[in-house]
Amino acid sequence: MVKFKKNVMNEGPGHIPMHKIPENMQKQLEWCNEAPFYTLGPLTTDIAPGYDHITSAIGAANIGALGTALLCYVTPKEHLGLPNRDDVKAGVIAYKIAAHAADLAKGHPHAQAWDDALSKARFEFRWMDQFALSLDPMTAMAFHDETLPSDGAKVAHFCSMCGPKFCSMKITEDVRKYAEKYGYGTAEEALQRGMDAMSAEFQAAKKTISGEQHGEAGGEIYLPEAYVNSKER
View 1 (tube, rainbow, N blue to C red):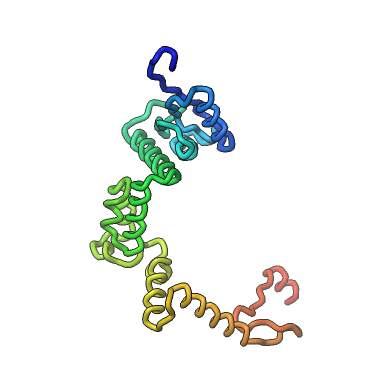
View 2 (view 1 turned 90 degrees about the vertical axis):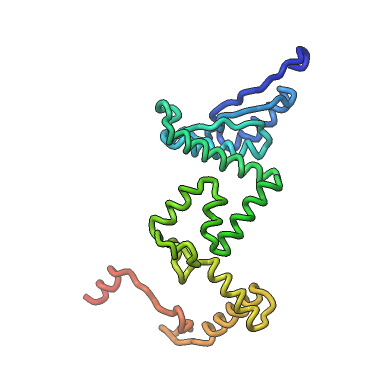
């Protein structure tokens, strides 16, 4: 409303498939003289009543990255009933995640610094810092403590997802220490040398099965049970 010098905010549509979100944002900027634009989502699909805080947060992250001015949160009760306190929390958390993802896409320094801080705490197994930096610290700690409730688990270099032997971050940490100890230069170089050595070992171990050459390691042949049973008859 430039002619009348009035402050105006435009409300956008609430249901838009993902491939039409960029067009919606662009048309609003063109037709409304770049007036502030706010959206409820938009919901990207209608198939998930009870989970519309998720279907709409997907759209919110997309349109937020494209420049919408304000995101109006949606709760799991959308289209079903009046939300309670827990529904409101779920909706607000979903939209804080969407807004943060949009800020990352737009290159906001503070958003990236927050992500980097939590990523570093995760890689260094600083569990209490991970919880403190989380968007919802109490939920993050509660999920961790469901399977590893002891105080000692808060300093462990693993969680219950992969355990102590298969944690990718612990393995990366060990590879870096190995590379430094044996003078490989970088962890990537140590990994490449290790893979080359295993490949050479695999190729060197040959045996003949039905006249064909197969590596000794991984050379087993697995047949369907029905096929084996038919041959035994």
